[in-house]
Image (tube, rainbow, N blue to C red; front, side, top):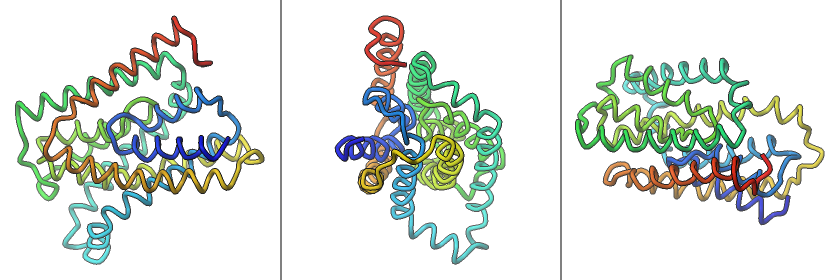
Amino acid sequence: MSIVIAAVLGLIQGLCEFLPVSSSGHLLLAQKIFGISDGGYFFTVILHLGTLAAVLFVYRKRILEMIMHPVQQMKYWIWMIAATAVTLVMALAFDDLSDAAESGKVLGLSFLFTSALLVMCTLLRNTFGGDVTIPKMKWYHAVGIGFMQGIAILPGVSRSGATITGATACRMTRDDAAEFSFLLSIPAILGGAVLEIPKALKEGTANVDILCCVVGMIVAAVSGYFAVRFMIRLITKRSLIGFAVYTGVLGLFVLLDKFVLKMIAW
């Protein structure tokens, strides 16, 4: 892997982790295109740490407030723990399924599923609006959003797209849907990195270039920061339908390549 490719993969991870287009799906697609196999899991863990740093920095004030005033912020903690617990159960139960889903057929269908989620999110928002804030959430809201995040263990299904759609279905306000989705990404990203560690150790790190890892992590962190800031503004003011069109077209392309064009070695 060259430094340029490492930077490109870091950019893909940083942007796609928070844009509703699926970072895992884009990373898998990019690694297939560039022919990356050795050290892929370890490099993915490093990129996850970069995006984790980005969201921690953006929400540093909220996180510090939750730590310094846990009683006043109790509902934030309860709902995040509940949602994360549901996601964790799904991730552990279907971890083997996520590995088996790295085929062109499943990846293409997953991108199309993300597209459908984003269309649903737009329709729900336009039809029902939202008035539920994080302090007013109920237990079934947290469970539902955690379930939606759990679906995103499949490459090609966007974590942010799934959680924002779940929050919108719970009639959460735009501001709180964005905040809860991105706060929820912190344990999700960390957990995703932890789950990748055994695979990375099994694959080995002999062919891993440390400089490439550092470059990829820095690019992922910087691009992730701007992606989070961009998405916060977009969720609160705009529609996600453009991303639905993009993931829909990408899903169709992946399926077309898998069965007709065969340009990528799946």
